[in-house]
Image (tube, rainbow, N blue to C red; front, side, top):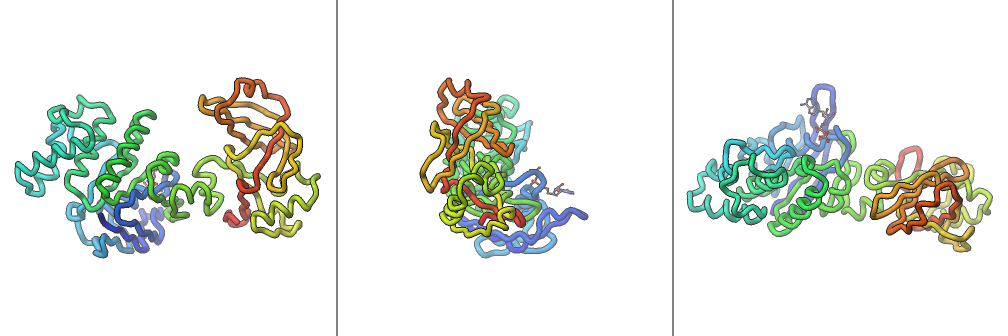
Length: 364
Ligand code: ATP
C-alpha cells in the first residue's frame, strides 16, 4: 500500500498544455479515478506517473520518495492498458511470468505467483492457452494478472474496459473493484465513462483542460458538484433560468422561501445571474395542480415525448417558457406511454435544486 503525491505537474506538447500545475494526493490502498472528457490530460498524467512521459516540471512522490529520475521499470508500478497489450506469441502463463523472469524470481517462485495471479483473476486452468484463444474479457484478465503478479506498489489502469461490450464491462469492473479491495494495491484508474467511475472508485478527480476541477467521493461528486461542468459531466442535470417561468405568477414570497431554504438571499434584480439545476430522477410527476408545501415548487408542462429504456422511462416535458425538463420514472406503468401531448403536473423538491452562478459556473 503506497501513497502517491503529485506536486505541480506540468506537461506541454509543443503548444498544447496537457497538464497545468497539477497537484493531487492519492491515499494508500485507494482506488482513485481520473475522469474527464477526451483530451483533458488523463492518459498524459497516467503515463507521467508510470515514467513513459517526462513532466516539464513538478514532482511525483511515492511513499515520500521522489521517483522522477527513476526509469519506468524501476518505479514498481503495474500497468493495464485499454488494448490489453499482451504478447500474442506467448501463452497465458508466459505472458504473466514475463515481468517476474525480468526480475530474477526463481522458477519455483514464478510458478507459484503465476498460479496465484491466475486464481485472482479467475483464469485458473487456462495457463496454456494462447491470447487468440481467449475472449476480450479473458485477455484483459491476463493483462490484469500480468500487472498484479509483480506485486506493484501502484497499479495504473488506462481505460481497461473500453474495448469490451457493455455486459462484460459491468462484470469485469465489479471483479476489478473486488480484487483491488482484497489486495489493497493503490490504484489509479482512468476512464471517460462516468457511471463506471462512480461505481468503481473510492474517490475520483474530475479533470478539464489539464486541470483538476473537483476531487471527492462518488457521492460528493454526484450530490455536491463544484460547478456547472461537473454537474453536467457526471450524470444528467437539467439547467433552467431562475425563477422558473411558471413560478413568476406565484408570489415572490415563494421564490424567497426557496432561496432562503437553499441558504441564499438574491436581489430580484440579480436573478438573471443565477440558474438552477435538477437531476431528472428528482422531478416528481404529480396528479395535483398545486402543492401547498413550502419545500416544493409546483409546475406544469406538456409531455413532448417519452423514451423508455426498460428499467425506467424518461419524460421530456415542455414548460411554459419553452424550456425542456426531463423526469425519470422508475418502474413505469404502461399508461405513461400514453402521456405524450398531455399536460402533467410536476414537483421539484427544494432539496434537489442546486443554484449555479452563471458568471463563473460555481454552485452556490
Ligand atoms: P482521451 O480520453 O481521448 O484518451 P485524455 O484525457 O487521456 O484523452 P491525453 O491523451 O492525455 O487526454 O491528451 C491531452 C492533450 O494532449 C490533448 O489535447 C492531446 O491532443 C494532447 N497530446 C497527447 N499526446 C500528445 C502527443 N504525443 N503529442 C502532441 N499532443 C499530444
